[in-house]
Length: 234
Image 1 (tube, one colour):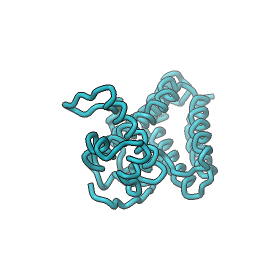
Image 2 (cartoon, rainbow, N blue to C red; image 1 turned 45 degrees about the horizontal axis):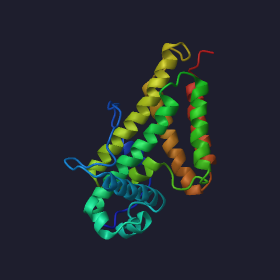
Image 3 (cartoon, helix red, strand yellow; image 1 turned 90 degrees about the vertical axis):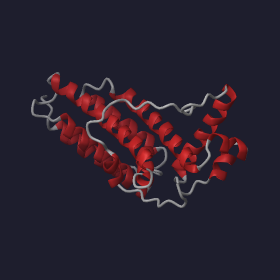
């Protein structure tokens, strides 16, 4: 993967990587490579490198983060870094796998038992509060990666596509439970409502990042929730 990469963060990125109908959980090893057994010390070194790269690429962007930056932040030697990651492409793919699992683990905690509109509001509040800690800076951890990688690395794009599909699927499953329990009207479409919520979320992240102000994200999510609310039975 050649440097530099264009770093275009845009709301189309989330839509570009969504793959409808693929709702299986995303599960990827973070500390092992196929066909390679690591010692505990080697696994710890690899995990430290990936953790440093995850944070650097979130704050600086994939393109602006160099292997020297990662080496310094992870306190590893060049030989250690290149032993685990022979090039930047392999490191970026490890970052994508690690970051998507972090985000999805968090979202599963909020959404796997979602069954009420109040639960949706709590989900919204948690996302807004988390982003408010940074005044909206840096955007969505997955959306920012998608903005840089969707048109550059097809393997990374596919991983992100599965992750966005699972995230949207968690929302759709919760909305389906609400409809099945009678909380939503029979004509409510959980899949379409979930797509609307995800689009509002990703657009809100982008506007908040650009403005360094959380308000656009709040407005976008609240308008999407108002649309869901119009299908409530009581």
